[in-house]
Length: 111
Length: 112
Image (tube, rainbow over all chains, first blue to last red; front, side, top):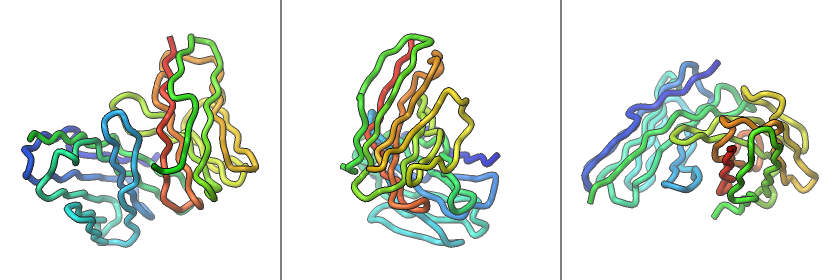
């Protein structure tokens, strides 16, 4: 079945440093979503990417969907302590199917 | 806040018991998905309901069952609880099958 992997598993950065997490799927995806989960909280939707090579920005966050629609990345510029949490990607193989979540990347930001 | 609510917040059960978890979707959302999230892992898809019909199921045994009501609220039932069922159970509602999912706060289930 479809598998979604993320690297790294953990990332510790100093406040102000950049951060990137990578998401890879074993199959081509129709679309991919990114979520953030704060410690003790629930996943919160960040963005959805649909088109091959698509790049979207939200303030300091940049999301990219690979040309082959099998991988994606989330880049945070100049991290802040409010960025702490676990970032999940979730990919769907076909429209109407369920999303498969990756294991997440846990980000720690040291002040 | 997403407008998705879940009850109860926490629950402690013993092995072999049965449990029912509830989810009220965001107003107007006709699709509810249930996920199991073990500690330190990503959410695992259990099943999805669309307009009161099951629309997809993950790799979970039949003792995990669900229901969606006419008002689109939903229940997750788990029979014959096992220790490995201890997890955070999340429901997520969306306007349609392809739309953004809005997660509720979850129910933390502990099986002793």
